Length: 100
Image (tube, rainbow, N blue to C red; front, side):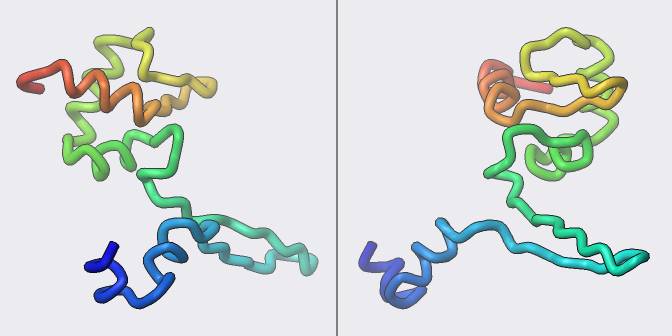
């Protein structure tokens, strides 16, 4: 923690790691306010194909092929026809592979 204290200053590392996600408020028609949150990938439970490709450094095409070859895999969550990848379970799946 000494290195973190020296580099980040007292408490700033803690604030960075424990702070709630950054929120963005935008006003749409009729004065309605909507808030969206930017949640870091490593804190999300599920990832889209695009997010998973960025996070795992695997191409979107390769991920889509994995999904189509294994539509009932334990690391997939289907929301209608849209697939989400369960991050931690996919990490465990990747750990068992030597090549992808």
